[in-house]
Structures are given as structure tokens and as C-alpha cells.
Image (cartoon, rainbow, N blue to C red; front, side, top):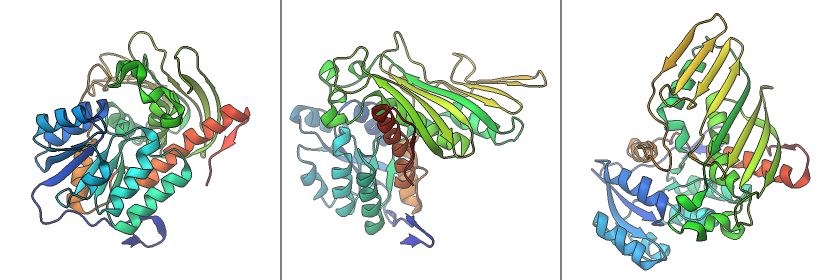
Length: 357
């Protein structure tokens, strides 16, 4: 059911009347193994009933691990009337196709990021959710990290005033250290990934900046290069963002950070500076212009080597049972996708690119 006045918002018909949500996970690669499957297994209101992967032994392995049925064809899984909700954990080029099919089959969908490879695909996903009345959520986990939640709380206390400029980065050594396929991963192939570090990491930070500042990106200037990886997508990108409020900032994403990771954000405000996820002990540090400093232990930010509960699955399950829109519906996923689409255009044209309205 649509919410009056906004065609992207609607009431979700939840799984009311059942005690446990029956889950299917489509794609049994690293994100499913490290995030979706263990988090569903840890949620008392979810039960993994089916898994799917085109590589038969991967599906069989995860089916054995979680007591589920194994499929190699996602369409067959979607025909299973026992399945009420699915996670889409596939290469980027399949997100829209499988998500739309799942929604049309009457399943709620949690889709990995970036939600699609184009604005048109994203719109088709949102429309499929609207028509079905089922929930579509995009798995932007940075919003749920405790350090980021604390940073947003402090920003909106008003003590720092408005954010004037910022810099945010997400960098690690590359997906070969994470992907189940290693150096042969789909992440490096444009036909399946459509973008490289920009879509893998940059979209996380675009979403984080939009959410932290409660502001939209107006335009992007970007440089992208393939500096190290044997790939036909970029392994490094540097973006300059102009927000609708006038705030300016940089967003960088890299697959060539050796060693370790950098997932930090720095906010330069009217009355002080905030550093988030930049210190190994204090995840939020604020220096105020009156000389005061606050150092806060807010919980470690997840890394590829050190996984922490993302909060995404718990939000997805709770939203379904509550019959409410999730914290990150399709419209939010599309807004963050459009930032990286504009960055991609800018890297190609050499000009600043506005965000499509």
C-alpha cells in the first residue's frame, strides 16, 4: 500500500502470524558465509530453510552447515512456497534481476550493495516492491556500526554546529583477500561488477555521508584509475562531493591499502572536529573549539579480518515482523547508488556531474 504523497514509500505487508521467518539465501560466497547466514542463524525469529549457488558444492556445503535445502537455480528456490524472505548475495549485475523476480514471487528481499548497476534497474526494483507490498532492504551496514551511530548522535546534539567539510575513506588490500574466488573473483570483471572499488567500497561511504549529515549529494567530481590490480574496473577512486547544504568533502575508495584497512571519517564542523574510526582504541574523538576533547569507546568497526554483527539482518527481520519500512529501503539504496553513478560519469567525462533527480 502506498503512503500518500511519496511513490517510493509504502506500507509493507509483513509476515504476521508466524513465529519464525523462513529464509532463503541466494549466493553462497563470502558475504553470505560471513554475514547473512550466521546472522540469520543467530536471530531467534529467523530460520534458514534454503540456500542457492550455481556452484553445487558451495550450496551443498552451506545446506549441510545450516540444515537447509540446496538449490543451484534461484528460480527454483523462488518457487518454493515455504520461503518467505531471501537475501540476494550475488554479483552486482544480478542484483536487480533476482530481486525483481523474488519480489514478484512474493518474497521479502534483503539485497547486497550496490543495489543495481543503473538507476533504471534500481527503479524497477523499487516498483516491484511497491507492487508486491513486500519489503525491499539494501544491506548498507555502515549505518549500523556503533561508532557511526554515536557520531550521528553527537552531530545532532548541536554542540558541534553544522558540518562544513569532511573526508571519508574506505580502503583495503582488495577483494582477492575476501572473495571466495580469490584473484579470479567477479569483483575484477566489469561485466559482472560494473564498477570496482567505487561500487565495492565507495557506495558504503556515499551512503554513510548521506545518513550522517542528513543531506544529499548535489554533484560529484571524480578521478578513477586501475593502478595495481589485473582488472578491467578501477581499483582506486577519489571523489569531491558538494552537498545540497553547500558542505564539501572528499570520498576515497581503494583496493591498494597495504597493510590493513582504513574505514575512517573526519568531520570539520563550526565548533570542532570529529574523527570516527580513526583510532584503534577510541572510535569517536571530538576536539571542540573551546579546548575540550571527548574520547569515546563505541565498539570496533568491522573489517574483513575481524567481522562483527552487522545489524542488517536483525533490522530486516524486525521490519518484516513489524510490517514497517526498513531503515534502508530501496529509495535510500538508489540515492546512494546515484552518487557512484555520477562519480563514474565524472571520471569518464572529466567534468563535475550532478546527481540525477
